[in-house]
Length: 88
Image (cartoon, rainbow, N blue to C red; front, side, top):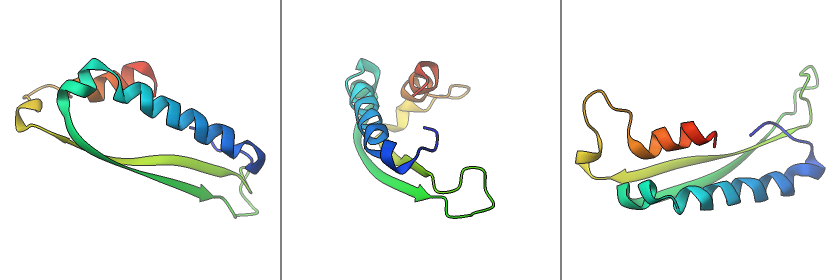
């Protein structure tokens, strides 16, 4: 998610939540993830010298609990691959 102006923050948050719901409903996610924690952080750029001054950056910090068997040598992992492939 790119930085956004304050007036666009609510819309960006809605998009983030929809994207997370889409991820949660993926078959690979349901099969692999046994539990999760998602924290929302919104940073505010208050550096007046920055080109992105007075913008906000909403993003998630996530922990996914998976079985040990999820990690196989030479493999990134199905859910992680799915996220990168879908551009979330």
